[in-house]
Image 1 (cartoon, rainbow, N blue to C red):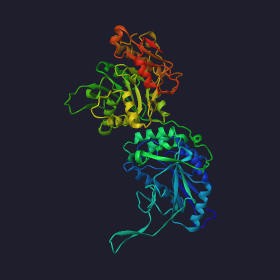
Image 2: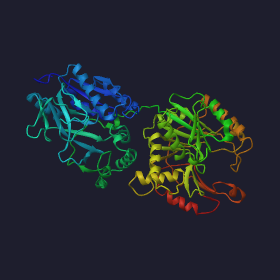
Image 3: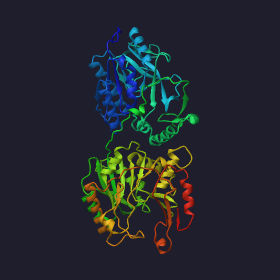
Image 4: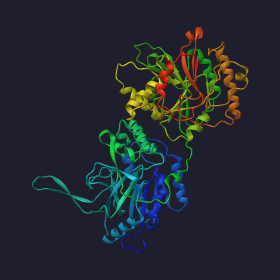
Length: 627
């Protein structure tokens, strides 16, 4: 360090799992003032989630640009508590900087910003006074560079700054008595003394720290400025402290997305131990930091392959179709993909074993008490799958996403992965159309019988089901679950279904005609292969015809023509233009399980707040066809 007498070489070590969109601005501010920059990368989060390739891409790009000198890949013991792992990783950075020859070091996170002038002024003071270790206060930004969070700490929040490399961090160390991150408090050498009057022991510290004043140095914590705010909370090491974290995350994202000066008084929802997980928001008198680039422009999305479990509903009559699936779309599954067939069987009310599982044939049998009225796609199935994956020894594959499909549907697995590769918001539930049934009191269910959701979404559904009033009758369908989710996950009044749902176009042409056999429709990631007549009733030899149709679809898929020219454009549901409501009369209507249903053909925009009211009017409108 030219011009310094005590700081011979200064290193900066950065913990970076996400928030890499800020790294260019952060490092650019102090790069000319330091000798060495190392970034610690952990490819799997503390909770077992893979690192987003987008973040790794940005770190590698910064190294090519010369802002980063070294990428330190860390593989930690995931059996340890997440915050203990974080403490270990900080000390690994200190060891690396020591090995590089640094005499002083700063360990920070990828969203911590210091201005160039403040950083340089603080270094000069440290060098001049030869401080052993230092701390400074910080402010948490919210939403943009003009707003901040008012945390309930009268003394302020503190973070370690530059120190001599011989000092390391201790988990929950008590050697710094003020509010600070428990993963990075300096361990101070001390001798334990005893009070002769009381007999109590107390530490006599052999090294002291310097605390920078608010006007001397402050860290600008860009904690709530993200290109993807949900990803931050999903991967946060402290999230396991909150048993209701998924609900809190949904509320936090909703609040963040709709924040402006006009509703600033409503407080922010965050993963923080305050009443209602609420923190007040303040507004700066002026803007204090001016990053060089818009951090959104630094994001270059990279695809990431997610693990996928396909659940296939099978009845006793459809057993031949199971073999057809194993010979077609499930014959060569990509890595990280599993298929499990499930069916309903009655083991009796007194049966101790509620399900049987045979891994060789990938078949799960569910007790009828778990599946009611044919609505197998919701919590009935997911509850068993969740329990078996969490507790059973045979079913160890834990997917990030679950696709529930019917045995008569062709699932183009590669296309499902292409969709998931670029999905970053794991709160979205994809369904193949919507059905609205009079029999179920205008409740919604996937029209095509398939549903794709993340493991987190499944856990959210199960958590709200467990919170519903015991003994209260509850329908087993999506609409009821959405109502429960609204109650437990959102503060705002009104329908919030758009927070969960996206409709995916699938093949709805199930009429028995020549094109169904010779040239199936080429659209959708799920292809319906069931063959029905003009009234929607299965024809004779349905298994044989469905098998024949599925094999034809598979041949087209292998040639790459099934989805030729198809582009995936997810859109939330809207009842309006392009929506038709049909009422069946006569014998056909009497025999139809669902007399009233809707087909959403074109979904142009996100307008769902009036959906409940529109459904109510549809139920009582009458007539043969209403547009």
